[in-house]
Length: 63
Image 1 (cartoon, rainbow, N blue to C red):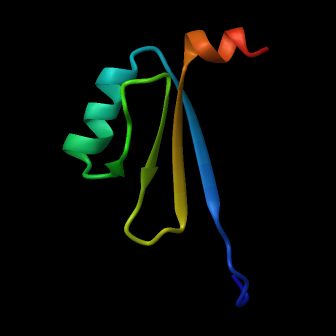
Image 2 (image 1 turned 120 degrees about the vertical axis):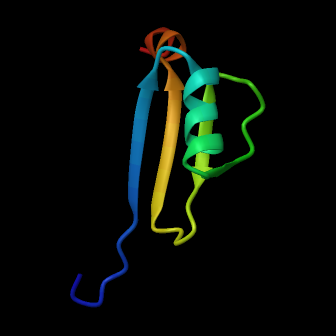
């Protein structure tokens, strides 16, 4: 990207946090410190991508 540092963030609204965290953590191998709450973030090996998940229920409440 022309020598510029680029960081990308992606946020997903999910209906079932437990299933989605298990998929990204256990199947795809992303690292997370998720504690069972309505928000999860994941680390990637390069650090270039940030991946966040929010439960749909909590997102609607925050509007």
